[in-house]
Image (cartoon, rainbow, N blue to C red; front, side, top):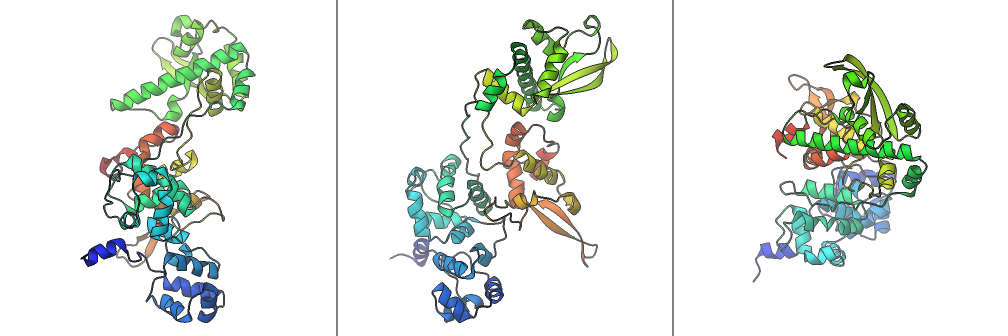
Length: 429
């Protein structure tokens, strides 16, 4: 005979109750009586009464019916703030039962590999150990994210975030890296529009940029100081002094070996800058022989790098994974992370970024969902008499996101200043 524990393992109880106040508020806002809502939703007025009193919890399909009857999303009735959804929130919002989710997942190779079942989905949503082969393999569970996202009708990143909120004490599922793409036609056309001399210059600048990036990586491995990428990406092209006194830069030596270093260098790099392939800047340095001398620096742009890769027959760099932020949003998140544990002043974070990473924010209908990586937290005055101010801080997921993907972001967006983020969460990575 099965124990009661075994019975509920196979017949799990609802994990969340509907928020009665939200249900009542929405019904009253629409001017509906309980009987009218019941007729719309296909249930009895008595059941609506039980829902509003918190005595019963609607099943996922019934929740979807209620939401449709009230003209809102299901999560508007469950009380899960935008950007704090758990796995069960996503399932409820999609109006799916455990059996239906299991059925949908078993249609995928990942679902069959993991032998997905309703009890396993229940354990997954409750944060319990999921028994079975491969469930402790982050790469195996990572392959389940796309089928789950398809079943719930949400982006993959939203499923990953909900998974990390639900299962906080285990490694995050690993999404497969996006494959490198063939160079775009635009990049190939840009390369072909350059003359031979310009092509040599752009190719050698890209190679020197890569060599410098490798040197910075080696310094980081050896725990040596590494300047910001915005600084070391500017490559010394020439010193404004005679070569007999100051010698040649490494980039000049590269060009000399290719037989294209002559007084026409300035015209060549400026032509590349006009096409948006390089950025030219100047500064001064102290030379041990020549004293203070001017210096010309060049930095290859994203467009320039793409054109050089196309011309040299290299694949394009892989796009950021679906779970990663854009360079702009990563810059915002790293600012908040750098301000931990006190947080960032409330007025220093505003604008559109909050609609993508702020708890409780929602973009335009059909737009990207908020990921809930930062939240505005009240700070009490001395004595706890009132709220003195609000400060932006990382949520639990935001902190974990930074820790999980810091090295990935550093490689992906080297311009972003991440100084001080290594010590986040006590340096645990």
